[in-house]
Length: 94
Length: 229
Image (tube, rainbow over all chains, first blue to last red; front, side, top):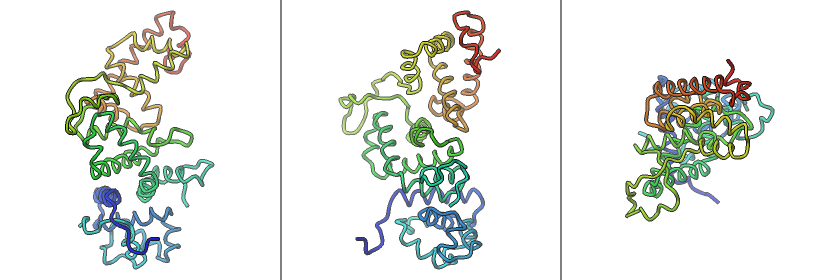
């Protein structure tokens, strides 16, 4: 049984970087934060509508996060909390 | 859950992921990578070993990077995949191999499994080996079993150089398999420009068509869409 946070995963961290590069190319102001937000929804295997409902966050906030309009400290709480459990080495992303 | 693919098997996780990726939703790329990372790693390792790059295959971080590349390759081509086709990592196998070769700056010549004797402290000697082309190899096997395929192969091989035949055939295979940019895939595989790949493909098939239309031996092939006059 896992009690603590998962260890960092090289592949997960790399993939977030690649997603961030794509989003940066699309003009995201905060591509790394957006990539993390996208990854979290990916883990839920839900589209934005259902995901927003599931985590209790307005759809607009999910869209803003994934579009790169929010800095990490501006992420809605339910998304920011989940970021710590993704196996992504957030320290390496900066 | 959104399934933009419109197929009748919306509950299949793979179909959902491929449909989601086809719509350009990067969250499904994450889901795909997370779910199939092990399968993708196997594909990447197989390619690395066939290239004789056991040194890279033993490097966990490099392999993780190449697995991410493989996921990205499939994401970029997802709109061409359809339910019932080969598994995505096999369907996009050539493109994945080309991506690996490009990342490593490596030739795409295959080495057989018995080439371990060439290894020396993880380095590979430069002893050349024949290029093994999976698509051409498949055609050869099909030609042995089916006379019409043999006829097609004979017509196809009656013109052009071996290299141009391989380029033209791979281009056609990639196109049929739904590769949205076969010119780029084939170009990366053969170390030529996409423009050249396209030209070689077009010129070769034009020449094959001329032969098929002129030579009575190939008259039964004229009914194929490929050779419509």
